[in-house]
Amino acid sequence: MKIVYMVETHFIVREPLLDPKQKVIGFQFSWQSNNPAVESDVDSLDALLEFVAGHLNDDEKGFLLDDSLIFLEAAPQLLQVEGLKLFPPKNTVLILHKKHFADSANVAAVKTLRDLGYGICLRGAEITTLERGFFAFVTHIEVKLNAANFASQAKVYASLKQSSVKMVARNVANWQDFDACSALSLDSFVGKLHLTPRPNAAVKALNPSQTTILQLMEMVRKNADIQQLELVVKRDATLAYKLLRYINSAGFGLRTEVQSLKHAVQMLGYSPLYRWLTVLLATASTSGYSPVLLETAIVRGRFAELLGQMKMPKAEAENLFVAGMFSLLDRLLGLPMDEIMASIQLPDVVTVALISRGGLYGPYLALAEACELNSMLVGSLAESLKITAEDVNAAHLSALVWAKNVAAVA
Image (cartoon, rainbow, N blue to C red; front, side, top):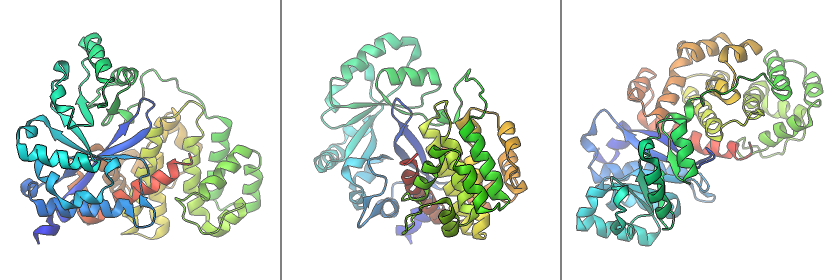
């Protein structure tokens, strides 16, 4: 049926929207498919938006991504889709190209959406000429940083900051350009940049907290006695506090508050404790890890785990979370991956996935990565795992919501 076709064939890919401190303040969602024939079909767009909104809203809790912004690529047909009304206006921004404003029907639809509180991001405008005629219709405007003409651009941006229109830099190519955008108070879509280590970053050794966490992870892996684990945790009061704070967070979904490590193990078992120690390891950096990297790692781990739950036992799927977290741990800690992996004995199947994206876990990790990189391999990877687009999208959106709860207590 036409009305569900887009849900069944289109994969959701995301791109983070960062503030100048590299904190994730939202995402741009795009639709990827090998068959673009239904891109302009209103029923299909409606079905896809209803699907996304259904996973990001709760009847009691409301919008599950809190204050995050959602940017949506908006062909003119999307302006008329009823499913759009399921998204909270204050959290939703539609990206519309300048050329579409030449159509009076599109302008009327934009005005209606603006009256309802939705944001509109203008793409393709000549920023140097300050096309202020559009400003009555838009809340955001995409800009492209030109490092060779930075001084004159800075003046234009300073003028723009006096208006209510917010600037979004797109396709920021390197960290120098990102820092320039930050200095100009631009929000930045950075694509793959946040996955690239900053140049000349000094390689540091593990700090005492990280060493303790790795010791605990090794003990948990070997099913050490709970009393032995508690003795190690008690050496670091901050670690004990953070561990219990994580376990009692909304991401865990426990109804009873956990009061001790012994209680945690009794409630959860060793495998969930192991994966939470992985999160703690990532947040124990004293060198100032990137918030976007941490959130990306948590999403990647949870996404891979949810995909694995469809095909393998729970314990195996929990290993996928660890693989997802470890895949970014070198960049989070500022240490070579081989040094980190030498500090703890990972299961062989996890090691193979991290090194080559091979073995049992590799394709799941690769699929989670592809959805964050807008890779054209998304469809083929899902097909190889015999996971439908609908299931991939559901896992992706669920992982974003779950990670938001976890990152909030980091």
